Structure formats: C-alpha cells, structure tokens
Length: 374
Image (cartoon, rainbow, N blue to C red):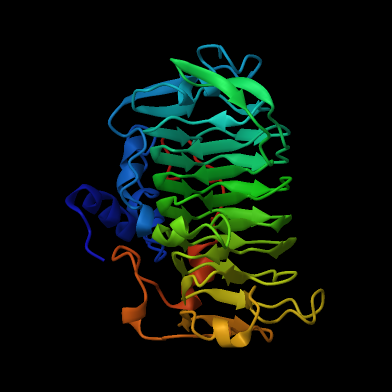
C-alpha cells in the first residue's frame, strides 16, 4: 500500500520502535508520542470503502465537559448532544472520564468526529448513536454497551430543527442512508438490538479495530431482502476482534459488496459467523476463524445463507481467500471465485491470516495517555 507524505513520519517512527503490526490503520498513527497534539492525523489513516471519511478534521475542537443528557430538545452547551447536532465541522473530545446515559438516541449531524482517546468514555444504559442521512462521521475510542430502546419523543437534530421521533430499536450504532463513515477502535456489547447496523443505502463505510462481545445479532449490513436500494452498499470490515459470547451476524450481509478482511474470531460463534441473504458479494480474506466445538459442536460452518434453495445461493459470489480455519471451522464458497467478480477498496490489502492475532490484539478502546505512544 502506498504511504502518503503526511503519514511517513509516523510510519518511520513505528519502524524505529519495532511497532509495525501489519495493521495499516494503527501503524499509521499509534506510535506517535505526540498523538494528543496531532489528533486529527487519525483522519488520514482509514482504509477500505470508508477511507474518505474525514469527520471533523477541517473544523475546530469541541470539548465535552458535561456528561448529562437531561434536555434532548434544547441540549446544554458542553454536552455531547449539543456538540453532535451543530452544523459546523467539529472534532469532539472529552475533558475527563465520563459515563453518558443518553435519554434518547444521539442524532448526529455531518462532519463530526467523536474521539474518546486519552479518557474513558462510556455511552451506556440508555440510547445509542444514530447516523442518519449524513456524511463524514468518525467514531473512535468509545465504550458503548447496554443500549435500550427509546423514542416516541421530541428531540433536536440540528440547531434549527427538532421534531418527533418514533421508537429506536436499541442499537449501539445505527447508520441509515449515510456515507463516508468510519467506526474504529470502539468496544461494543450487550445492547438490545444490533451493535452496528448499516442500512437504507448507506455506503462508503469502514468498521475496523472494534471489540465485539456478549451479543446475539452483532452486525447487520443491509436493511431487508426487499430493499434493493442497498445494492449500492460497500462496506469494509477489517481488523476487528469478535470476542466471547457472540451468536450470529458477524456480519449478516444483503445486496451490496462486502470486504471482510483480517478479522479474528477466536471464541467461535453460536449460530454462524458470516451470513447473508439477497445475493450479496462477500470477499472473506485473511481472517482467522476458530470454531468452538465444545460450546457449539454443530456450528463449525462459518457461513450461512438465508434463502429458499441451494440452486439460488450457488450463484452468489462468496469467496474465501487466505483465511485460516481452526478447530474444524470451514467456509462454503459459491459463485465466481475470481478477483474480477468482487468490488474491492484499493486501500485494503489483506495480510496473511497468521498475523491476525497480532493485528487485532489491541482491538477495542485503546488506553492512550498524553505524551506516550498510544
């Protein structure tokens, strides 16, 4: 992968510190001891279909000082809700450790970065984050867990607009009709619905370096079998660690094109790992799949098609290339196995699956401290 001039300094620093892992996102910025002062360098480090997500890179910093969420129609300045509804580009950081319990879903406006590095930020025991009909969002370094259904309430989505919202399902992060989105280095678990859902013709999305644990339906990519507008969807799932207590949808894909690259599945899965319906194109490359033959002895198959007949799914383009299968895990391919049959982001180059444990060892929220390598 070509290295931009803006990233050469950090890459050379990584090399000198022997910190190169093969994880091209982390190797781009993590070894910079001045990351605290160079926070916006992160926006140049994405890979995959969401590579162009710049978040609030071109705006000012907004410091969240208040963890409350008492008024969702007129949010108090200094709160996370007040920050994300603004119309200007903002790079949002936090003044201290915070537990934020959202009274209603957090509706984001375009060109925002939520950056939790340097402190411990939890969004928990209330609503989750909604990214709807917007562009250029980065969410990095946040714990999101125990999200609950909320809604049927008035709430504000911009300084000039508020209105009635119906019920939200209780997703950790819901991406709806949006593009240029990057979800990186978050820890997600135990929500009522999905952990990350990407639906309604969202595209140009990268989901990377996250730690997923203790959840049933983890990641849905595609609204429904009938929603053919999702054929435009292009999503990269890279360098994530799918940890203990997961059941299915790691991810589940519909209609679009999906790169699933260099992820680790060390704890197995309850029903399936990679599933789909409605003829998605799935490129599984350089992943490490470990089936849990003790807890789930009949689910060693990585893949699951939800469809009426084998004659139909045999035409779907699902391929495994360079994946590592352990403890009886196996992948059932279909369709055209050639590279020409798959849309791939040129910035995502899969490394050997033997490197995956090292590349994903620090998935989830990082422990970053000022003036230290992150």
